[in-house]
Length: 170
Image 1 (cartoon, one colour):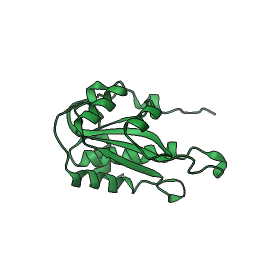
Image 2 (image 1 turned 90 degrees about the vertical axis):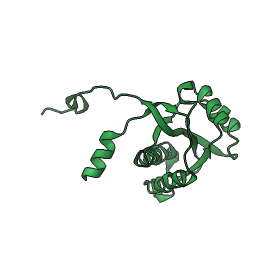
Image 3 (image 1 turned 120 degrees about the vertical axis):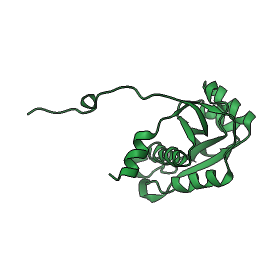
Image 4 (image 1 turned 90 degrees about the horizontal axis):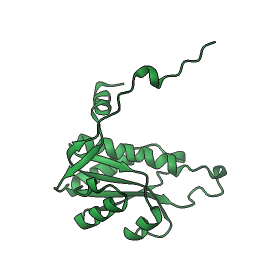
């Protein structure tokens, strides 16, 4: 692994709260462009990013997800995929629930390279948020990504490397 990739992964930590501010349109477009480099099943990149910069919308979504601490994010990305994209194919494997989070990881790391903080949320009332965010019909909301200048960050749990590995004895 290159030193750059190692440092990027080792240095990243999710945002606990944001400072009020803004993100340039160029930074948002750069982040989205890098997300499309993520691999996906059959290379179809099924995700779509709907970006919101209105502070009231961001605060309402943060509150509806139970994360008031994220209300000062500068941007919100609703990451979705078309429902039934793989219906009747591949034995109905939920590829969007694998592929979209990988693209979201690219978003988090791309934001980090721009000096921006990020936090991803997977647990939410999807139906209510699809309506609240006026997502197009047929889009399945997979994740929300809050972006902005970090005020504070979450700390990683202290887990020993030996706890991550399982060695089978013969």
